[in-house]
Image 1 (cartoon, rainbow, N blue to C red):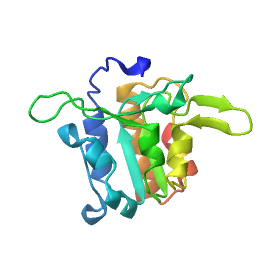
Image 2: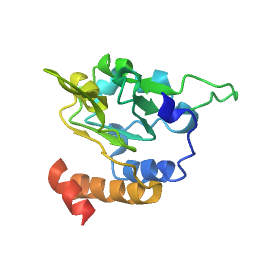
Image 3: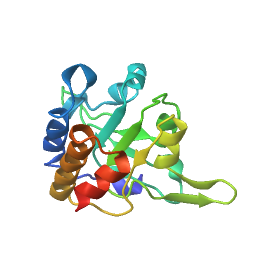
Length: 174
């Protein structure tokens, strides 16, 4: 995971999550922020009960070896010890989400490796294999502040105004 050897703290990812959580009814949400953003929580079997799974984090994409791609989780345990800080593509393939929507609010998460007769191998493929019906990704680097604002508008359009995922993203971008 050469691209993710050192990750800057995303100052607005927590605010992004809080703003989205404020829109979602309490009984229909689960949050794993800070130290709780662990592999154990990211691979919980009961994630299949949620319609939307949102990752406000760093995307780590290896175009040469897509199996090394993943999304960043908490880098440390509450005790201060370093931890396995990535949800890798093979972990994602083994999830059973069944979510209507997975949002990877992170840089370059839509990039992958094109394999003849297979198509693009990357994070999107992994989440689709995990039975996500739709996956929102980025093809480029994204700004932490702007992405936080975009995601808040996106969820407002979708959850409060009832727009579908495509319409909501379009309206949020305007």
